[in-house]
Length: 638
Picture 1: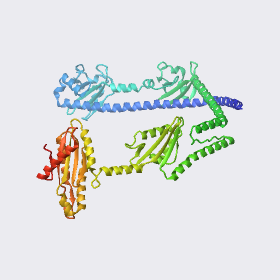
Picture 2 (picture 1 turned 135 degrees about the vertical axis):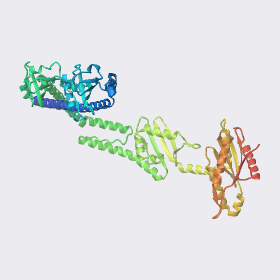
Picture 3 (picture 1 turned 90 degrees about the vertical axis):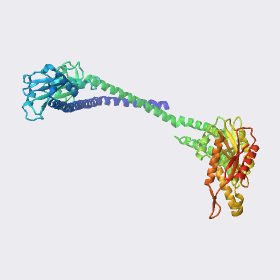
């Protein structure tokens, strides 16, 4: 059935293509002539535009150079009028010409004779003897002291070399100062304005000709091919070219027919031509291209129809089999949606209903766990299957969004990598407990088999926070928040044993001055506030160098560690007492007092030092300070 259907479609479409080709051949010639006419018109327009641009550029260059040359001529006249000796010396005239950047410099007297020049051979020339020099005599007859003459480039009278001369009348006496230039820039600009130069740089297609003909004489003024220049007249008569403004076929004397387009521009005729055989080649190329397009479309339509037949029957069966394989692999979110006929649609609905009932079992288990009130979630995934089965609440326990849970359920490898990342950092002192974020802790029990992995996650945040609270209370003083003395000694012992080579540490014993009097006078609440103020100063010291603790009552201790030498210890102690002096405690509504404390310290660089001995030495140093003076610190003397 499928093969018969495709066979009839092929016959019908092939017949249609043949009809389209016949029509295309009939229309293609006219279309190509229009295209070629528009192409020639555009190129002729570009030629005209180029000619106009070149003329404007040449006019602008001439005006700029004329102004520049006139300025230099006037500058030369200014120097000659004020320094008569310059005009009498050829070398000085040459020097002046060099300064003004001119090629020649002449001084002409009232009789029209060159009396001085930068070129000695020109001295004595009578300006009246030559047609090139004669126009400058008019400056001698003019009463205008600002009179000047700018001559066009031409061969000079003396040597026949191309020069452009500019003359200006002298001030206060009859005479002319003349400067001469080699007009290189004008000549270069003029050479670029020729038709041959333009056509040599103008792009043409294969077989195309561009040429310019004098509209009066029929003379060929320029051609895009050097080999054709001068021979166009052998192919076309001027009258026949004038008939080609709308495009026409013309047969030359060589017997070849050409498609010609012409356009008049001022006194010339700009023409473009292409051999008729080249135009026919383009038509054949277009026909072949059209045929190829049609064949491509025919093949595409046949393939599309073949695809539709397969998709409505064969591919539908294949799709159902693939979906069933995916569901078997554990991808229960797979939806079978094969349409195209009623039987496929009914079969898809039946399979989807069956999968939905399987998924609902997992949801019911999640609901039972939720009803129990236990913060628990479970997951399972098998080797070789991408699907991960999870219960509700997994995202909340792991601190991830429902969207992330959904993504993990589709990719067992990513979920396994995520679980491995969490379980790689167990909480110290606990079994299977992991920190999810700042205030979330879970216990993850996992069992692994050859088939896959099964895991249960429970929330143990409350237990861990309670343990942390108890641990804090066991190690910290409840009033000041500082370490308790026993815990301080343990930490200090570790710091001493971990001391690095080249470092020192110190134990500091502190005692508040006059604390008993404050307690007796203002009461225990004020005394407690006094103790807390002192403790806050201790806590403000940099933790990378200080351990702080309350020993008992108004007695405190510190350890200063990770110092390079004794001077650094003293620097930190000075900083501590400076901060202490900046803090005042309100004892009553009318009285405040700066906290006063005495301290003694003992330091060591030996990692075998006993902390008890250092504490005793610091205590002895504190005793000496209390006995002699208060409000400062002292060092154990040994």
